[in-house]
Image (cartoon, rainbow, N blue to C red; front, side):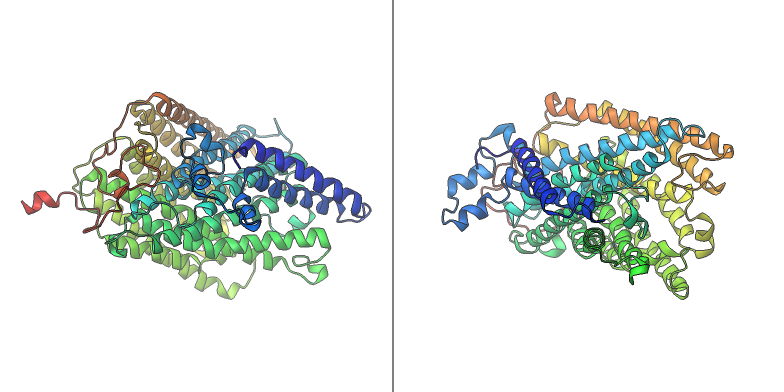
Length: 602
């Protein structure tokens, strides 16, 4: 147990993958049409199992099974006590270590997705094929899309639902510490599978992997599907853990009406994820079964139907947007009330709005299929539910504005990203309302207008929210401030880059440019050139932010335990946070948003 770490995880994954490959190659019928897919799938399964074994995911269970359960010293070792930096490379059960590990994994995912994005934009800087052929371009689009989706799903919920939520509710750890570590390292195991799909031919049908095209793809589809299944296991474990921690481990006096708003957003998003991600898991599992055993769930000639895949995918696809968005919104509400020095505007309205967003998000999936011809009589009802979801979205947006209104705004680095979110989310939200109407969607669907819309939501809004959360909780995680000058430079580069990149995409879409094309007509040259320049500006902003994180983590200005004078529990414990968070569990007598009430009462 004491010798296992990230390196042994990689070694274990490679060895077991190689073992599965050899066994499969020797036992399977190499003349079968399913041979390559089965071989690839079993090799990928071997990688995941070997990585779990090598990192130590089953050590505790294994010792219990042979009657040598772990003692107190073993548990302290697993929690990373006295291990220093080595604990960040191990299967560590301390929720704070897992939070730091999620920060690093998120940065790796964003870097991989960003590199692919820059490759795509560089290809599109002028018409014609320059750097990659259309097949490779499509493979880059597929992996870029899924890598960035996964990165944004975990960008807020991963680091901060792990690091701060247990402290916020007055708990000493997560409800299931070993499962907490398992969720992190299962995500890590999925990343090589996803990126590895590029090495075995990639995918040519985009990140949504629509059948029956996905049935005709090469072995890259097998690794892609396995990556999604592995990721779904990770998010399920993490979601169950978050919900159980909040519902069962709150300290005395921490009623549901006194929960910090970020805790509410975390458990609502976790519950929505438990509903949504199994649909994607089922899609990928059925796809693998079709490809490896000869079934035909999605193949019409064998009695299947592509509509099954499309509906299952979008049953996940739209709730997933709010799984991504809600934790970012919760973090922004925490930041806004601290830096406005005011109570949160209409706490119950914020909770109700987020709950309504989650509820309505499961009723709108078919608006992604307005142009497909599936169930046209249902177009009206789905158009209505899609327009209705703008109401709770607007309510939550107004809660942010209401908290800012007439507040004593303290313009520190986190607030820059908050105001960037407000600006970008307004554009992303309004353009989404247009796309909810069937006549407009018939014209815009499949164009760069849609790409610009969801990038304003994901990059301009969710990513800004994730960076705001990083700037806000960075002092608690590291004991140091994130460099203010570099952080502000990063903000302005990224903010300007987002406007240049995606406003130009709106123009391209309005002029009719289709998405997912490696080349285009000369009429779209100027807007694509501008979009590519904007993408390079975003890249510069992200590189400056990376430099700020590294420099500040190593030698930034010490922050002390509560630099923002915040009132939630994570700021009231020492920095660095003790192993068990609290020597004595606190007793809660009020909500944490009483800013300014002392002055009013006096």
